[in-house]
Image (tube, rainbow, N blue to C red; front, top):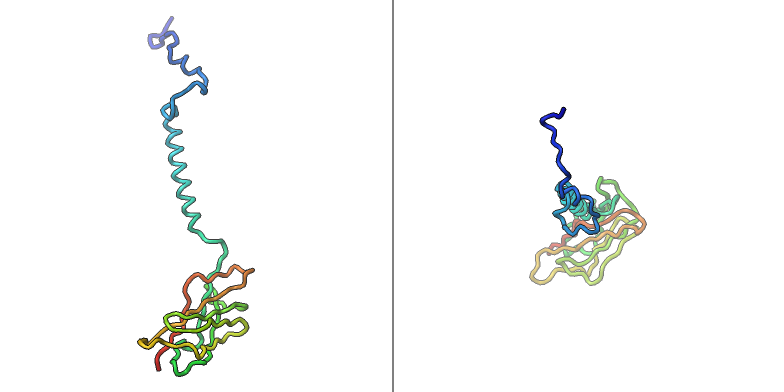
Length: 165
């Protein structure tokens, strides 16, 4: 005896469409299941966010260095050729060695850059000077870490300030 809920119908044309190969299917994205389309869109969005995050990250293990002045780094123009003591430190305040420090003109004038690599003192040369209309000016300081280290100097360092005096 047959159950009233069971129907026996002949196979429809739709069943025969499913047996076609994918090569002959010319329906574009409308032939894909909606879950697959959603997964592709979400996956591409997540990948673009991850690539953007990775692009903003610098090299792993880079340590920023800066200079700390042991004395006051404000010099009057009458006291040029004065030596200033400094130390090169990492992000945690640990003193480091084997660095080259370069002193160049900022808003003050300096004929030639000054390079220091063997000592922790730098001498402000006699040729450092202010322009006629200046009361104060600065000399910029750059740290050049050894090439075989993971130290970098990407942020600005404290400058030497010259005061007309």
